[in-house]
Amino acid sequence: MESLSFGSGLLCTGVTRGQEGKLNCTDIFTAFLAWETPTSIRNWFGVYTMYNLPIGTTNIAVSIARGKTGRGEKTTLATADINHKGSDLGSVLSVPLVYQFPAPGDYTIVFQEIGGNASIKIPLRVIMEPWPTFNKKEYEIIRNTPQIPKVIRSVINCAGCSRPYTFEEPFLPELEITEGTIRFPKDGIHECESCGHHLDLKDIQGQVRNSIKKAVANIKSGGR
Image: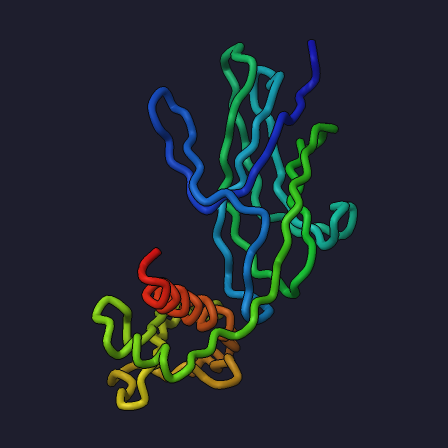
């Protein structure tokens, strides 16, 4: 009997199951954009194909390592127990993954058979983006375009104690923050009032500002 092997793998932001049990992947990517590190917690899926699955349970570990080779120290992201009963030629499986990147650069996602030799490596890069800023003309577009938000807001739960916080940034100088919210701090750090944990917010703020920047650019280009 042939030994277990991986056929291919990819990373995507969403997975749905369609007709006949087929997996549909949305937003396949090879890089994350970041506006500060450590990044906000990123959620995505690893999707991989396996051949020659033995009857019974196969254990798979998914880990991440710094660099292009995947040979360095690894952090386990998830494990999966695959209970195989049939005799089909291959299986396509998805695993939800969560990680907070400590620095920009190259990473490797490793799918590994626990206790076996089968593995597959997927390269991933974290790219630092310039901070999204706006000029006077862009602020006027924001002011005069109803579909563009005038305020960005994010609800963040403290990783230390799960206390929720609502952070806000008005884009127009005449606007004040909403009562009960907290203005995004300039240094991107908010100390939890309950447990003292530091919430890293700069990357989240950058992501939302970038979405506004894209909306403004779309208006400037005539919606093309």
